[in-house]
Image (cartoon, rainbow, N blue to C red; front, side, top):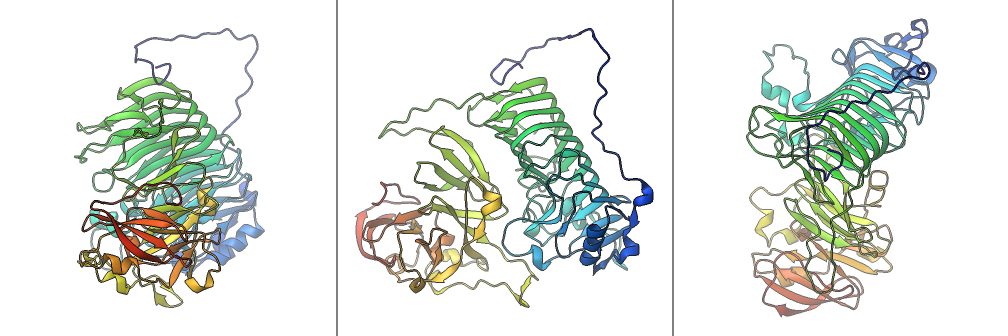
Length: 594
C-alpha cells in the first residue's frame, strides 16, 4: 500500500543498483563495553542485594564514584530514584536473578504526583544498562521503572520489567507451587502506575531484547518528545490493561520486531499501539497478537494520529481465534481504516483530517470511536477537551486544525474537566487509596462529607475514595501536572471564575438545598482566581459548568430531570434558584458568561 488511502495490491518490487565504490562500513548500533578490568563489583561497595536492606545510598554512591559497575546476583531494594551519570554503565548477571526492586507502599513512589522513576539515565549521555530486572512492586502509583533520556549512543539491553502477570516471584518458606493467580497478582493494583519504560526529553539509543509485561503499569513503554535517533530490536510488550506502547512527538526512530500480546484476563480492552504526531519512523516485522483465551473483539491494533513519513513493513495482526483486532490500523483524524490483517508495506504521510463544515446552529460530528465521552470543556482559543473516565484518557479537539489528539492517559480516573483563565487544564479525578500506605505514620482516609448523605451514589460500598483536582499545561502534561491546593474560601481574595458540578443526582430531594450550600473550601487554580468548590457531587457529575460572579449559572437536577437557573455570588456561592426547564440530564451547553 503506497499510502494509507491506497487499495491493497500484490506486487513484486526489485531494485538493484550497481555499486560505484565500496560501501561505507555500517555504524554499529551496539556500543563497545568498558574493559572488564575497569568494572567494580557492587557488593564490594556495600550493597547487600538481599531484598530487605535499603541499598539506595550504596548504589548511588557507587554510581557517583565509578563509571562501570557490575551488579551481581541479588535483589536490590531502593527507596529513591537512582540517577546515572554521563558515562554510567550498569551490568547485571541477568534480569531475573539481578533485580532492582521496590517494596509496596514505598513513600517516595506513593500517593498522587508526577512520574517518579526508579532509575533515571543521564541527559544525553552514553549510558549502558544490561542484564537487570526492574520491579516497581504492586502498590506504588507514582512509579516509573526506568526513565531514559540518554543520547543516540546509549544502550539498554536484556532488561525485564516485572509485576502482575509478568512477575517472577520467589517462593516464601513453606509455600507450595506458585499458582497462576499468584503470578497475576491483586487486580485492584492493575493499571495504577505510570509506564514501565519512559523514553523522553530527546532520549535515544539502542533498545534490545526487552521484555516489559508489568500488569500494574499503565503501559509497557512510552516514547515521547524526542528527535534523537533510536532503534528498538526485539521488544516484547504484554499483559497491560489499557496500553501496550505509545509513541508521541517522536522522529528518527526505527522499530524492528516489536511484539505486542494481549492476554484474556487483563488485556481484553487494551490498545496495543498508539502513534501520535510522529515523523520519519520505520516499523518492521511488527507482530500484534491476541492469545487464544481472548473471547471479546477489539476494534483497532494501531491508532495513528497526525503522523508523517511512517513506514510499516511486514505487519502481522493475529490470533488463533476469530478475535484478532478487527482493524489493524485506524487513522483517527482522517477516519481511514487499513483492513488487511497481513500486509508487507504501508506508508503514512500526513493524510490530513476529514473535512468538517462548522456552521452556527448546525450539529456536526467531529470524531467518533469513544466508549463514553464526557467531561467536556473548552479554553479561550476554542479548543475542546473531553475524557473517557474508565479508559483514563483525556483528549483535545484543536479548533485551528480540526484535529483530535490524546493529551494524557495517566493512571488516574478523570471525572470532569475545566480550564482556568490562563487555559491551564483542571482535572477533577478519583483518587483511590492504597492499603498500607502511610503519610506521617497514618493511613490516607477520605470519609464521606455531610453533603454525601442525600444521594445513594455514596452508598452500597461506593465510598472510601477521594475526589481531588490536579492541573496541567495540556501542551506539556507530564512535566506540569500537579495537585491543586485545597484552601479555605476566605483565603481567596478574588474570584474570577468558578467550576461547579453541572449535574447532581440527589435522590433524597435536596437538590436545591445542596446546590445553594455555602461551601467553605475550594481548590484554587494556577491562575489564583479560578476555584472548584469542595462539594461531594463532583464525584458523580459528568461536567463542570463555568460560573462568573454576578452572572447566571444553570445546573441540572439529574434525578428529577429539571434545569435550574442560579446567580453566582462574589464568593462563588449559588443563590436565587429558579426553575428554567422541565428537562435536563447530564450536561449543559451555553454561551460564555451565561
